[in-house]
Structures are given as C-alpha cells and as structure tokens.
Image 1 (cartoon, rainbow, N blue to C red):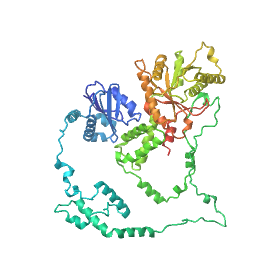
Image 2 (cartoon, rainbow, N blue to C red):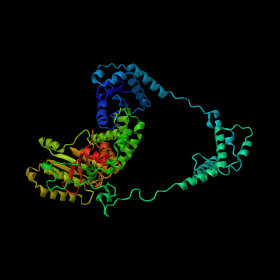
Image 3 (cartoon, helix red, strand yellow):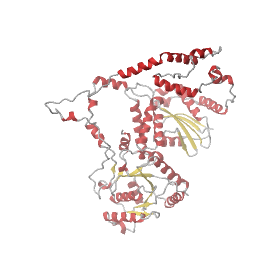
Length: 608
C-alpha cells in the first residue's frame, strides 16, 4: 500500500497529491528536495527517509517532479510502472495548463486527477499479481522446425558448420570480399544439385551456392587484379613544402620552430611564494582560498595556436553550424556517447568509479527531455550541467564555521572540542598542528589532547608541535585558571575494517560529545575514499550508545599539493557523506592550510 503520491513543480507548487496510509507527505518530500534535488544527487531515483522509501521521476521539459512514498520494508514491484503511467497520463491530460509556464496559471488550474490515479494504481497492482502461465514450447514453434531438412544433414567428409564458417571467413579476407566464401574442398555445384533428391532449398542455400559458383569461376582473376591495384598505387616521398631560405639564412626565427605548440608535461600547481612562516594564513589569521590553476591555461589564453587562426572564415562558420543541434528535446541516446566520455574523464581524475557513474546518471536525469537552445551542442550542454552539479556537490547543506562556533562556546563559558579521526598515515597529527596554528593566529588558546597511545612516538610528536607553537605564540592565557578556548583531540589511526578500534572510537565520541568530528583523508585515494567514509560513518552509528549517534561532521583533505589536477577525491568524499571539506592541507609548514574553493576545484577537474 502506498503512503502518498504527489506531483509538484520545480518551483515548489504542489499540483496534486494523493494521501494513502500517511497523514502528511511534507516531511519526506522536503527531505528529498534538500538532500537530493538541491544537491544534484539524482542518480539513483530512490531516496530513503526514516521508515519510508521515496521514488521519484523528473520531467525536465515541463519542470515537474513525480514522487511516490511507501514503507521501505515492503517490496512493491509495480511502483516503477505506476510512476511512468502517471507521468505519461498527467502530462498528456494537462499539457495546456502546464505549457503556460506561469505560477499563477498553475495555482488557478484545477488538476482533478484522483479517479485517473486510482484506475492506474488498480491496473498496476493487478498486473503485478497476474502472471501469464508458462506453457511448454512446441516443436512447430521453434526455429529448428523452420529450417529445411537439407541444412540439418551432414554428409561424410564434411566439417561442422562452425569450423567451416571460420574457415570461410579466413578465405574471404584473403580474397578481399566482405561476404563469407566457400572453401576449396566444397562439393562441386553439379553434384550438389543432383544430391538434393527433390528437397526444396532455402534462400540462404541458393545464395551460398551462387557465391560458390562465382568464386570458382572468377576468384583467381579478382585476386590478381586486387594485387595489381595495390602495387600500382604511387607512394609520396619527400617533403611536401620545402623550407624557404633568404640570402643563405633564415628569414625569421619562427620559421625554424617545427615543434608542437603545447608544453611537455604538466607543471606542478604552484603555491604563492609570499608566504611568511608565522603570518602565512593571511591578515588576521584568515585562510587563503585553494588555488588549482595551472600555467597551461594562461599560456593557452595568451598564445593561441596558429592553426586555429589560419582557418578560413567560411570553413569555420560551416564547421560551427555542423555541430549545432536544433531546438529539440534531449534523449538518452543523444547524451550516451558524451556521458561515457565524461565518466571516463572523471575516473581518470581520481573520482571513484561508482561516484562517476552516479554523477553521469544524475546529469542524464536532469537533462532528459529538456529543450536545448538553437546554438547549443549536446557536448556543451552536458558539460555545463556536470560542472553545475559538481559545484553544488562541493557546497553541501551545512557550512562549518569554526570561528563562529568557538565564539559562541566562549559566550557559554565552555571549551570548543574537535575530534580528529581517520586511517593510518593520512596526516592527522600534522594537520591538527596546522589547525592549532590557525586558531592561535585568530587569538584563541588551544589545548591538544594526545589520545594516540598505539603508535610509538605519537605523543612525542604532538609535544614537539606544542613546544614549537608555544614559541610562536606564548601561552598568555594559561594563567586564567587553565581556561582554554579550544580542545583538539588526536585519535589513533585505524583501518575501517578493524572492529575493536572502531568500537573504541565510537565510545570515545559518545562519552566526550565533541562539538565537531573531522575525518582526515588523503587527496591521493580514489575508490578507497568511499569505502573509508562509508565504514567510518557506519561504525560510529552501529557502535554508539546514544539514541542519536554522532557521525562525521566535516572533512580535512591532506596532501593536496601532490596530485596536480587529479582532484577527484574531493568530489568522492563530499558526495558520499554530504559533508563539507573544512580544511585542505597543501604543504609541510604550519601556514600551509587552505579553504576549499569549489569553482577552482571543478575547473581543475574538467580540464582536459
């Protein structure tokens, strides 16, 4: 039984709603809009909210959304058929009202769809219950019965069909024909005709025999003629255009440059050089934005290649008009080849394979049925939609503002607690020291809690960082009754499959109730990032003793200076958790801490 079925526009106007078991569909639908539609995560067409499963379909041509909700413990096989039938009938019945594209017309419109929906629901339920009885197939209905008797008789000395067919194909390649040819050991045409004994031959047998007769008569001549045409073809030798020399010397130095205009190799993403060790985070302790630009882009804009400028105006115009797609609705077939290339490009840029597939599927659902402009190509439309989706993914629902939250904790006279977790070797302690330096730059007192007792030298590492940070910022606030503003908790690195350590981490977070839980991950990982984040969140939820368990609140992305433009890990981590990347580590000094710039990361990701 369905809980509800609702139809609303992308502008938020509810056109029609069916209330089944549920009293209200507002909460689940709002959760769907916030978590899926607004966050560009529409690759699965399914969403789970508490005890409900929501399935939806987008009509991009008329800007409509169809949503059906039912209990997730139920297995309703007819839901997909129902939502397709409702979409088709509603669109055809109220096409005139919907095409006006105005909010006032939709509000004043009367969408009396109750009886039609109940009829479609009843038909869908009956179709899922009634199954056609399976009857045994008769010999007369099989394909074997339609073959002639001659094709099923094997004479002595004749090879099986598969081997003969393979040999025919090899012979056809030697002779230069595209059709399968007969072997030299085939039965002569006169004898084969006499051996039929009145049996009627099929069309395929007649064609095969005619081919055999033709090859036996003219095969050798054609082979010789084909060889002669190949040998007579002239071969071009030497340079097409000789170099022009003036008075024994070169007229221009550029004439000697026959190298490719592109640079060899991809240069490393350069960081700003005017960074001071103590005041490197910007004025007033502010974080600088992450810069993902490369010198290749600047060179491309300043020095355009010569062949592009040498194209004729007429040829360029016809080439542009050739790639245009008229005002038409996009279909899956139009976008299939472009989406395949986009998916491979994302995987090459270190995006997890499953995430890349879901991203392309979300873009396909977003664009299917959408009317393109006159001067828009399929490639540009898909690329633009993918860029918008990636920027939206990197800007999740909740923005973590640590400075604001710390000042709010100060007003309540309590410390602000941050817990760091992650796998081994990702740089938790190092980036904790960077964040501590950033907080000291902003005038807060920091206490570092060393909870890593498994790794040898872990506590000594944090003690060394604390000693160096204290020399940069003497503990002036230490005399105020040990009243620290921020507490940074460093936990031991652990693999996501280690159940005892994951249980201990969940207990630590439950008992201490930190204000912020940060997952520290590497920018080098690909598919592993998804596995780590999913299992960390699952372990925190399963092993927590609280009624509402604390999950990961944000991400610290480390080693970002080692990946050049392969920034796909940032997409994978934010997509799988819907949590923001709070800090990005880019070097080996305390000031190498950045805030994520979504547009810069997407530009580096889409760069060829």
